[in-house]
Image (cartoon, rainbow, N blue to C red; front, side):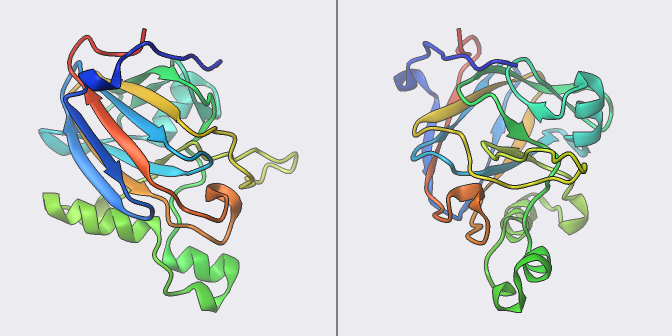
Length: 216
């Protein structure tokens, strides 16, 4: 899956917002609209979840997505599959070419296990997701395995997952066109204990383009 650039003008976006470092964001993307996530300063992991807008019981499934595409990473041409086997979104443009959907989201608990008890009270993606998902009447039980856009997670010869320096350059982006109305949840990853954010979380930009405004 090779990366591709796009000719879409950001000035034509129907929604345009900066998500601060470490912060959550959520919003609806309607069928045919395209959401663009921009890594403004480079090497910033962006955790994301997707739910069907009119039925939150249907949501992104990492397992079904990987099984259908028979490839370990998300990139140009990937179709994001729900737990009902439906296509939720498809990747139509991607300047990075490598996005993880196996390593999951950081949490206070996993930080403690991996990095020591002094990290127990550090803010984490799972906490971001829990705060944001509560706005829609959902809770921790509704959090599933997520996508980590721009996060570099190679698979070691042993089969273990590694988290190493990101490869996305400043201004790197991914465009996803919705195949159904979806709710998108984002945690702009606050992790500082491994190199997924270059040990320095930074802001991202989220844009939504109207129908027909996807990458060319």
